[in-house]
Length: 95
Image (cartoon, rainbow, N blue to C red):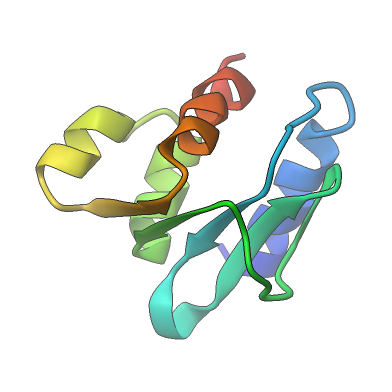
């Protein structure tokens, strides 16, 4: 799944689940997805919080197959910036 497709799916989900703050999924050479101002895009910008992870682990995280805390402890994802913004992500991911 391409990052643009993932961003489009996140963007559609933001319609009924607003996300306050700004968050970046940084997938290294594969690119970024930025959640900010009520939308999700693949345009890079500064954000309140950055989650660094592989594109594969991003797909698993969004599908609920990678627990964020487990991912942190196993080094599959790293958080930089404001961790409170990352905590809000769990509310967005809940069905």
